[in-house]
Length: 319
Ligand code: HEM
Image 1 (cartoon, rainbow, N blue to C red):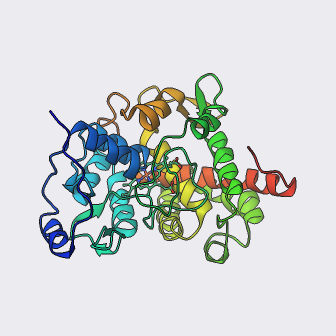
Image 2 (image 1 turned 90 degrees about the horizontal axis):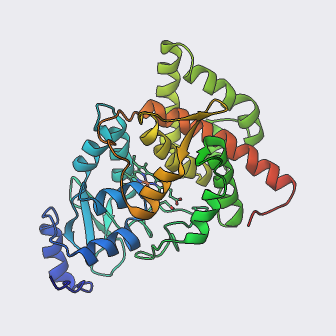
């Protein structure tokens, strides 16, 4: 089947029609779908969900949106509640779709979110650059082999420990002079400064989160609120939150391995989701939970924070 051309941004009247019909599932050629995955949906989960047909693209290829409820169901598959958190990200960061000007300045209709990730509020300085080129420019996604390799290099025996991903995040933040790390908003909510967080507050929180059911539940609730508030304001929390989602997504995969007491992600799963746009087999049958997100995001914040301070003191920016 010949590929349909991707229409250019229409004039105001056509655009209004596009928004009115925004909930309709778009009929896409493989090429158009591939372009959305590569250039717009620069997240290993959303890109994979679209590529595999698990998440329907709505409206049209030039201004793609998806249903918030569809994303909730994908995240809650297997009986967990991670989807409720995904709804928060979709609503909060991706409520604007392309308007007549070509900018992300048109509110997405109720129940929908925009799949234009670069250029959105969810894209930020200090990102890994694996999938995103310029976080401020819509449609600028592409796959960077070199940046993916920086993550792969941290694997041992095919597994990347959570603290190694933390080190990767720290490097990404230091490589980008525009990134904002542990500013006033964070110090007000989490700790006096990053040093205190990694040495005192973080470990105490981890102990509570992994302690008795009662203490875990209370800390989970409190920390969940703080972290969700801060993901958009601070690039360290934002990046830890994204990779926290990855760890939460894979935490209950049958056969998931720990190394030195830490959770890991396998190179096989990283390649599948970042590069091949495939989910690991059986992904929709295991539980994915917000508690796993809070625990892993806190763990990543500590390891990334430690490495960030170490590199800052030694004044080195990793390659
Ligand atoms: C379980 C579900 C999800 C997982 C496992 C996941 C995982 C990730 C990871 C690991 C990254 C970092 C990629 C990198 O730096 O190279 C990322 C980026 C991103 N994700 Fe997701 N994500 C999920 C759901 C979502 C949802 C529901 C949204 C919004 C609707 C979203 C929006 C984004 C955005 C905007 C970025 C790019 C941020 C940037 O690089 O600046 N993600 N995601």
